[in-house]
Image 1 (cartoon, protein in one colour):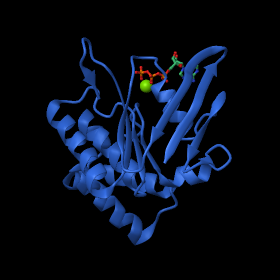
Image 2: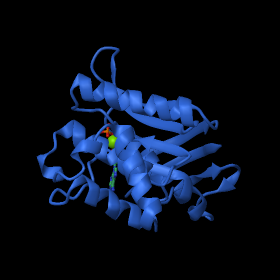
Image 3: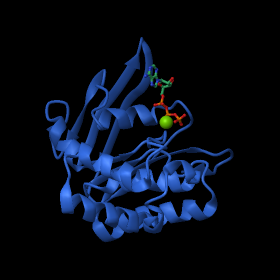
Amino acid sequence: MLETINLCKTFKGQPAVQEVNMYLNSGESVGLLGPNGAGKSTTISMISTLIKPTSGEIKLNGINIISHPGDIRKILGVVPQELALYQELSAYENLKFFGSTYKMKGKHLENRIQHALEIVGLKDRQKDLVKTFSGGMKRRINIAAALLHEPKILILDKPTVGIDPQSRNHILETVRTLNENEGTTVLYTSHYDGGSRTAL
Ligand SMILES: Nc1ncnc2c1ncn2[C@@H]1O[C@H](COP(=O)(O)OP(=O)(O)OP(=O)(O)O)[C@@H](O)[C@H]1O
Ligand SMILES: [Mg+2]
């Protein structure tokens, strides 16, 4: 479904991503593992068409995404490493805003907002301002935002770093359910957490 071929990115002569070859089958759940600075977020930015590769290719169902960025944008949901939410707006208002960026509106948007809130378990807190949320709850709203347009591919950049075990389990369970029940293809990043352990 999604393929990178010899993908490279250089910033001012400094290599950030070098020769990444990756193949994601539809319905798979795959982890991108590497230490800080390995180039995980840069790879995701290239797949999201936010930045252009220095060389190499990214293909969605065999079609180059650089010449057809609209194809991947339509079916991709990205949960960025850094939280991207408006603190002074409620959870609901944030989701309404993100939905409008996908040109969603009316009853359809309303239904999708309620469904996404249900998935992340925050339906009862939707009227509260995001600034009153814990870190884990903010993460979950960011995940809900990425789910609004029913993406076929969901990319999560370190979705549970700095999050308590209960919220972490909830997030992992949410992603597992989407993968197993809805067939969403999942790509997530993680770094080494000392020793041989990995942290999502
Ligand atoms: N916009 C940028 N300009 C210059 N250098 C950048 C830019 N973005 C990333 N880099 C560099 O590219 C390299 C890879 O960074 P990236 O953020 O992709 O790593 P990462 O694997 O996501 O790390 P982390 O685990 O810390 O999130 C780093 O050396 C970083 O300094
Ligand atoms: Mg990163």
